[in-house]
Image (cartoon, rainbow, N blue to C red; front, side, top):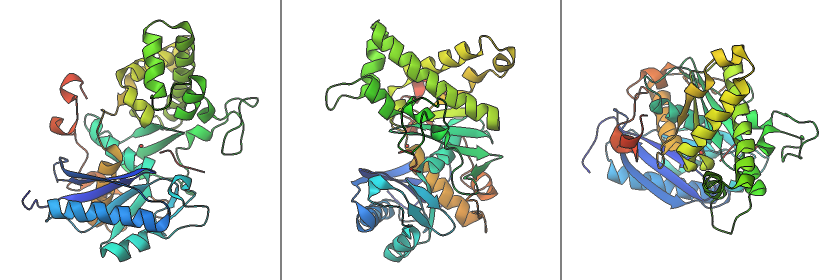
Length: 352
């Protein structure tokens, strides 16, 4: 591929793989690269370097700044990551930004992976609405918030941790140390425990297929799970009144059946409440299309915003107008970048 002016690089660093994209000024994904992620600081830095080198070779004119979305508790000001257990990073803050910058010789913008995905999700909502939540339904449950066009990470980086809102004081213990958290009902781990399958078989796909075939037990498990996800959607809408809630994460690979089940649960929850019904929550649901690299695209938007607006990343980790008002302003993603887009009008939780 020849030089492309204005392209930026964004990476989604996951427990098993690091996926990177080069995104053009029109939002089009110009190149992708994926490599396995090693454990610990050395493994993560090596994977990031390999992806960046490959993307830079594919798109030579890309801007030097790189955006990274990583799991764990991220301090975007200090450039550190902690409690990213799946990466081999414990509670001692790891100066990841400094390590990557030293290895690459490039400036780096850093965000939690769910927050990065929230930025990427703005491209999936018609008109690039200024207020949305990205709900990651993976092993755990967490949300990223874009409010007023800016990423809201919170004063302590914990905004959107809806998975750790206790909903049942007598419920199952949660890995966070509380009991009865929403994550114990509405997460990939909860679904897998409630619907065991053979090794290698995706539990969500198996559950929804069995429910669609009329298995009464599967219907009950599906509806309880969808009710939990709907509770998270309702919580996000009642606290922040977002225009849209974008469903993503591993469980969202189930596709349209997940959106339909969650929409039905939201409608059932509103059946006895004229107030809740007036908010039209089912209509706010958007599904991440299969194969769309939402967190990597969001990391590229983060890099573009950090490069285009001095001071865009503040003490709370909020990304200012440089992201939503710069050359990569949210817009509908070109259909060529969304698998299956012609058929539909149109991503590991944090560890705390």
